Structure formats: structure tokens, C-alpha cells
Image (tube, rainbow, N blue to C red):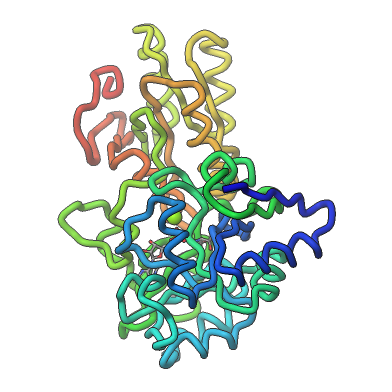
Length: 368
Ligand code: TXA
Ligand code: MG
């Protein structure tokens, strides 16, 4: 299939009209949102939605989010909103928040993966909004990556995964937030975070009071996540990734990288700006195959994490060592993604020592 590519800097109105016409004809089009790029189809057309699953290679038991362009459009998709759901919508829409609500009969099983609930979100990205409005239907859209790869945050990354598989890609530049929306189940008495994201736990708590976090997010493989998609390994680069967490993570990471370099191991490093500079000064260009910085703070980390994880594949390191952040604010979302990418191989650096937080098979040079 030929994939049309629209540069929105040129003739945005025409591009959006053409893309929306393809959606109405039952085709699949990728579009930018403020979180990550989405792979859109008419969410009320089961045949169109099936094409999204085929393009991604997505397991059929993993439901899609329906994207709307106005708050009141959720009324047609649900049998009723709880007071919590209404408060969330009033406060955080448009924005990076997805609410799980009881499903109306018009939502096909292909979209909800047979569940009796449906996930709905109203994005704040102007292109997403104009596109969904032009489609004239709720747009079912997962992240626009091949299943298992990091979500795309720019159109080139979408093109890498989707060229030849979908009808078109709307290029609206880079996504500002960089990690997916927060998914909140509003059907339980206490609202539950099924996937942490751009709207933080602290923001939810200040509105609703108590909020629960799906216990499966801790990474314990014995607990089954309530969001079906959260059980899959995700966001993973090809090389194994190991994460240092804790207050002494930067120092321990640098020491491990030096030891790896001495052993001639093809090491990739994912760290903040300061640690990157320190490593460049210590090792020069020869010590590592790639030292990729995520920036200075958690917002930078959210924005750049997926692009950097994708970049490592181009350097083919034999191992990647990464540096984590604390789980407050956006840290909860980024650490959820980083830990999954690392298959929960996590080291804890504090009180002058390195211990294994979870995982196995750590080489000696990592433990020091
Ligand atoms: O930011 C985002 O949410 C992006 C952009 C494109 O909007 N979309 C996105 O979609 O990340 P996707 O399909 O990659 O992730 C949706 C997550 C999955 O973990 C899925 O299992 C969960 O939401 N989900 C969808 N419907 C659900 C439901 N009815 N109950 C529980 N979890 C649900
Ligand atoms: Mg996804």
C-alpha cells in the first residue's frame, strides 16, 4: 500500500481534509497528539479498527482508546459517567488523560477488545483536534509504533514503522510531552491509575482525594495488570538495558561504564546532561558506542526517552546502562516506561552500595 505523507507546514487545511476522508473511507492514518503519535481509524467501524491491529501487529486482547474532539462527545460512547469521571473530564480535558468508562453498545468489540468498558480521551494537540473533528467520528488510536517498539514521538519514527502498511501520515512535528496519556479507571469506587502518564498522580489526588495505583505497575509478574496493554514488554531497544536508580545512581553508572569500557564491551549509556558531559570527559569518543542524554529534568526525560531508546538500535551496543529518576511528578510515568524497557533489570545505588532491586543476570562490572 502507498502511504501518503502530509507536511502540515505546507497546506494544513487540505492535508487534514484528505486524511479525514481516508478515515471515513475505513482506512488508517497516523496523526500527532501532545503525547505520542496515534494510529487512527473510525472507532465505530470494526473493519477499520481491525486494520489498526494488523498494521501494528497488536494482540487482539488489547483495547484501543477512542479520541474525541469535544467533551460532550463521550456521552454517545458510554452508558453513564461517574462523578469522578465527570470531574476528571471537566478539569483535565483537553489533555493527556484517558478515562475508562462503561461502554455504550455502539462501540464495537474490535475497539474495546470485548470488554464492557471503553477508554476515551480528548487530546489538546491542535492538529489532533482538527483532524478528529474533520473525521466526524470518534477516532480509535493506539500509539503508532509496531507492537513492542517504543512509541513514536515524531513523524520520521512513525514512517520507519508504518510506511507501506497504512494510508497516510500527518506530520505535525515532535510531540511535546513524549509519554502516553494517564489511563484512569473511573468505574471502581476509588479511581485507579492503570497507566501513569502526562497527568500526574499528584494532580489527580489534588482533584479527587484518594487515588489508587494498579498494583501490577510495581512490576511483580504475578499480578495481572487491569489495562491489558500493560502486561506486554514494551518500549524496548534491541540491546539489554539495565537501570541504576537511587541517590547515587549517577556515580555508580559512571563507574560501571568505565569498567565496561576497560573490558572492551560495546556499551550504550542513557543518562542526564551532566553525567553525559562527565563521561565524555572521562572516556572521550572511544569508550562507548553511544552516550545519549535525556536532558536536565523529568520533563526533558519524558520528551526524549522514546527517541533515545530508538536511537540505540542504530549503534548496536551489546549492552545499555541507564540512569533513572525518582517517581514523583512525571517520574512515575517515565520510570514505568524505563523499567519495562529494561525488563525490570534494576540496580539500586544508595548508602555507598549497589544492590539488586529486581531482575537477574547482572555482570560483575555493573555491581562493582
Ligand atoms: O497518549 C496516548 O494515550 C496515546 C495517544 C495516541 O493518544 N495512545 C496510546 O494508546 O497510548 P495505546 O493503545 O498504545 O495504549 C492504550 C492503553 C493500553 O494499555 C490499553 O490496554 C489500555 O490503554 N486500555 C484501553 N482500553 C481499556 C479499557 N477499556 N480498560 C482498561 N485499559 C484499557
Ligand atoms: Mg502503545
